[in-house]
Length: 231
Length: 228
Image (tube, rainbow over all chains, first blue to last red; front, side):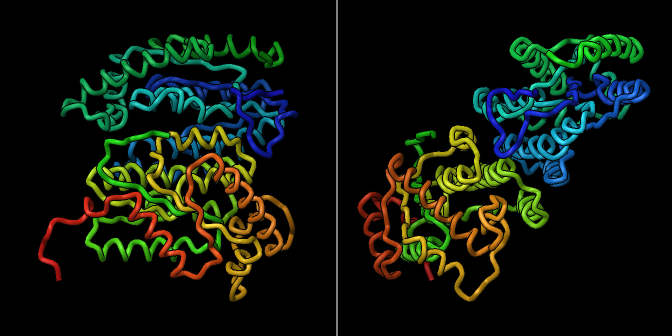
């Protein structure tokens, strides 16, 4: 039996969802994709079928959402609601059917990133949380935590440039993208530590090599699956 | 809902079920106000460029669930609200809305969404200064929409609710429920009721009369400029 954060999705039966929902959270360049790949391969080797989801990937809204972001067309509440549309489309059409078939769903971020980003951009915390109240409670959430200076170094090493959104440039910082990035990531991190207490997810130190992080994730996920994936 | 009394503009909304004649009335109102020299802006439900393609895809491929149907319309509204409605109100326009948040309050609830959840989505929206609810008997509304034997679209007919396999019948049942929700909303919000079975000029006269009574129109006249 899966539960939501309070709200009820209309016309959906949550009574028989034997699968397991695992979420990897964290900022960009914390290593989510790398860990997602490693965990997914490892789970498949253990015999679990894995389905993967992530933000802005819905059939309904993914493409339009990504395009709107490129064009700087999005005002704050519009962006919140567009992401919520994308989130619920995947929840209803990808995540829940996969859980019903008994798969392990490995989600690259969940409502927490969406809430944190909106709150940092000035959205009313309660408004956003209520919007996501019908989201399923995952069996486990692992938050890959790394300090902003590490993130900026990794980003530059990998792309040789900073991304407009990750540098929080829409927040009206002046022209300094480096300081913009650090400042924005700091605010996100503060919001995340608040959300961590509220929603009770596990922090994984991501300020180290991928192998060490993967080792810890394997241990945690392995233990959780042995316990039947129940909370 | 927010009460932003400091805004110099005024917000007028027209609500009602499909076939009530909202678009006709709101256009006549716009013409009249523009003719008086007022700064007026008309915006329609579900018309933002930003989400148009998503909504079209969702409807055509029937990807929408009650939840995403509600959210995509809220996204459309937010986009128009943040980019048009609010700036227009701040710059002293009379903003006319062909459908407002009550449309979602009625329809999405019929589709099974929780009313509190839907109201929260629109929690940032200003309450209109004047809301007209055009009401008319269900059978009249259904006949008007079906005039010319136009084929009803899937979501328009409420086929996603599965009330009947026949689109015409499904539409009738769906609209009955929508009207019921409007009735409930009318007891919660200060709507001005308009009898949609009156002829068009009679309805328009009533609407104009209310607008003149509630809004000091001289405040919204454009400064005298070269008018042609």
